[in-house]
Image (cartoon, rainbow over all chains, first blue to last red; front, side, top):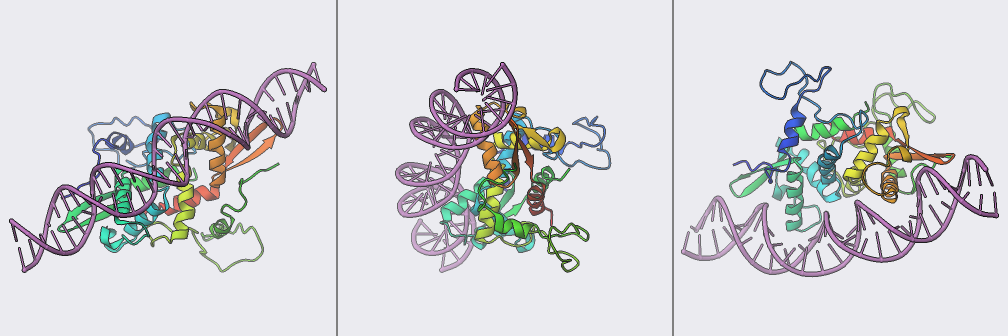
Length: 143
Length: 143
DNA sequence: GCAAGAGATCGACGGATGTCGAAGCAAAGG
DNA sequence: CCTTTGCTTCGACATCCGTCGATCTCTTGC
């Protein structure tokens, strides 16, 4: 079954916030209602739009930090570029560190919301969480 | 005068690679010659395109790591969103840490290539390096 | 039930990193 | 020249973090 984000309390709250639409009029009430056609999008506005609050920075930094390690970055790109959109740990374990270390880094990526995992039989498969990655990309948008 | 990236040997090589044009008409060629029409492209391909090599991961992780600290992220967004595209240190020093610490983090951001600095009179102004930020954004592209 | 294989967790260790106060340096005025 | 102001550098310290070997858990197959 799907394991998903390891720590359930890690970022559900902000992710909900991030799901809010943000267009012209931010009259967007968080609850009910069939959201207006367009953007549920950005969550996190471009970093150029306005200064981040301390809390926003805290949450967001966690995601960037997850990609701030060479081994994790390789693991992530291995998963992201793997055929079928997912990869078994055994498929990506050859990054020059021990197996416990690989496991450790995959856990970090999961906690940051960048990956999800699912056990199927003997193997555990990881896949990327596109919405979170997209949100990060948004923040680096030119304007 | 312009200080630019602190350590000149930090990432010049790969940055050259990253400078290659990529769109139809980003004809803004810094130097001589109209290279073949289209894409010499992204420098850093999307992370989903292919697994990163160890060296690529090393270089790239340095940039993401720079944004992997809450204080640095706030400083970066303060500079990025500041009127005029630049900010004096005194304009952005109110992030809850001591002034030496602010200076330390700005240095890190500079070393990562995300910011440049220039002294004008008594003040030092920081501004973002758009091409580097864009390159990071590229890597988080959906495909 | 038991052995084997795939991953996760634990505990330990060493090096990296964020933080501060103190001191240094540079420009601008007196 | 000396002071003030803005910022960087230095040294010290505590914490975080990446790494590993050993161990544990879970699943499969005999």
